Amino acid sequence: TIGVAWTRCGWIQHDGGHCGLSGNSKFDHMIQVIFEGLVKGGSASWWRNRHNKHHAKCNVQGKDTDLNTYPFLSWDIRTAKKLPKKYIAIQHYTFIPLLGLYVPLFFFTTKLFLWRKGKTTEAVVSAIHYATFVYILSQVCGGTAGEIFAYFFCGYVVQGIYLGFCFALSHFAMPQIPEGEDDQDWVTNAISTTLNTNPTPFLSWLTGHLNLQVEHHLCPAMPTHNYLNIRHDVEELAKKHDIKYNMTTFWEASKFTI
Image (cartoon, rainbow, N blue to C red; front, side):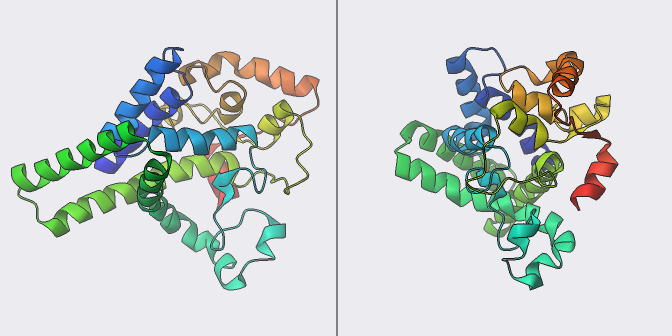
């Protein structure tokens, strides 16, 4: 339950990081700090630093840090040939379990970022998160140290699978651009490296409305629930410039990715 709740908070902090809540960057970043730092224990600045690179050079190797899944996972035949076959040959089995480990990994990378960048305020907010949760779990709920660790770890695993799988559907199975060959204009890059899944009401809610990922990459500061309003305009834009607009069902995208 806590993993799902943290994921739902993740959608809110995501929109705050993109200034897609109120349009006021200071207010939206404050909301992001509350949900990412106070509620989840992470770092808003770390998230923006990482995520903005993804938006600037989507699926460009060496620049989009979300592609750094080596040596266990590869999403491009050229890089797969350079990696240990024993890992790549079974990645369709290990993919989802490995997603569960990326939020526990980010626990360490976010804290290292806060220390290296001197983000004192965010570090304090994150510390309050852990102090509050540990106090409630130990003093109110009577949990042992092992139970508290399991609570956080299981919550992180659920969050990683939930967030990671939603993200993977939109990008990992799409074409990747080798480092040094990213000569596309930004709009072409945003559309051609991104996959939408059909915006049913439930799927849109489940993914924080980020199932319309093409629209999100073109208009990241737009409130996510408004992407439906521009979907057909974006399709027409892609058609006009002979760019493939990628749309499929959730199940087809899942099969495509795995």
